Amino acid sequence: MEKTLDLMKLKDIIKKNLKFLCLVPLLFLISSAMITFFIMVPKYEASTQVLVNQKESDGQQFNPQQVQSNIQLVNTYNEIIKSPRILEASARKLSKKYSADDIAAMLTVSNQAETQLLNINIQSENKKETEKIANTIAQVFSDEVTDIMNIDNVSILSKANGTAIQVAPKPLVNLFIGWTSGLLVALFAVVLKELFDKRIKTEVDVATELDLPVLGAIQKFK
Image 1: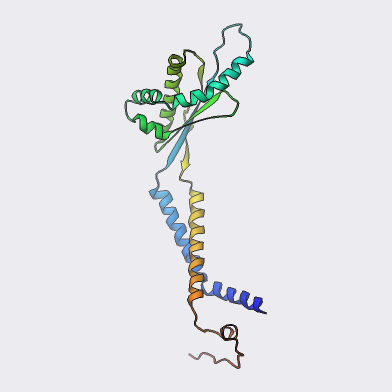
Image 2 (image 1 turned 180 degrees about the vertical axis):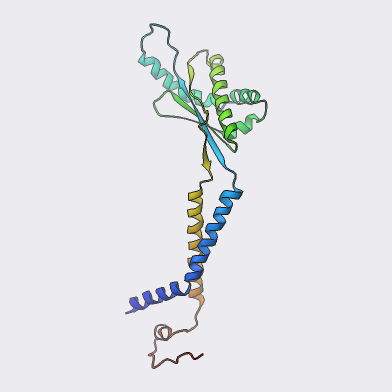
């Protein structure tokens, strides 16, 4: 019986606060949409891919040991790309529009395990500039690594030409977070209100809160 009463009370609470429980998540959803579409600055990502592979001369046979050596070099090249020498040379090639520190903040370098591939990723707020910076770093690295390592074994496999994509903000994620946050806030407010509201409002409250029998109820008259 107590469980039934609790469920009935919960149903009454939800029914009584239904407008509030709908309005607050809606306001949060609208606020989230406004922030996402009108305040947050879009961020784009572009990638170039370079291949670490000794350039073969005519008639040269495939050498598995050379491939393994190139794979081991990938980690070294990963750090070289992020080195001040490459970043400063890239900044100069970009006409000092960005400093080496600016480029470093935009840059991430990744490689797939046990491959000779390196991905140069750039994130910035300008789509075209994102692609330009990624391509510039790849070209500078390809040119400079020959002098640094005394070996010509880097080729640009793919350039970032028209491939930049928007990575932030993510509208659907932000809208879902906004709506969910609003719902949680509304539920929390309703729970607090019910916990601290000790007034007796119905005959059910008399029976459950005071443990007294209800002999009758007086109807409201307008």
